[in-house]
Length: 144
Image (cartoon, rainbow, N blue to C red; front, side, top):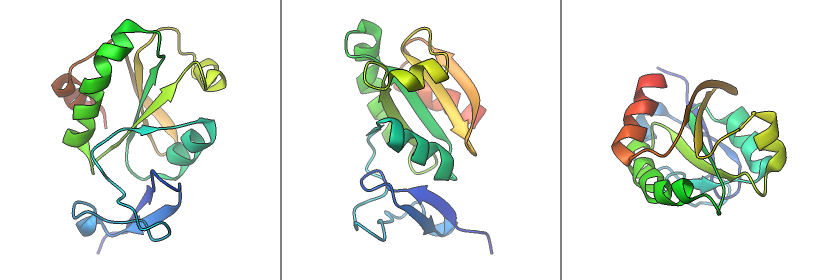
C-alpha cells in the first residue's frame, strides 16, 4: 500500500491526504468540501505560493506572468488547456509578477512568461517564452 498524496486545496489552502488510487476520481477538500482539481490554473499570492510549493506532493508548475505582457496574454488560454490535460498529475498555478514582486525577485525572473517546475519545495526546471498547451504538457511530463 502506498502513502497518500498531500494535496493543497486551491480554495482554502488546507493540505489534504488523498490516497493515490483516489487522486484521479474527483477528490474534495476535507475542510471546504470543494473539488481539489477543476482543470484550471490557480491564481496565487505570495502566501498561497509558499503553501502550494512547500506542502504539495504533486509537481507544481508556476507561470510567472504580468497583465501588460503580450506573450503572457497569448499563452494564458494555452496554460489553461494544459491544466486540464495535466491534472491531477500536476498542479498548475499563476503568479502575477506585478503583484508578487518579491517572488519574481527571489526566483530571478528576468523575462516573462517564465514557467518553473517545483517538486518537493525545490525548483527542478525552468522554461521562458510562450508555449502551446501540448508543448507545456510535454515539458512538464519530461521534467516532472
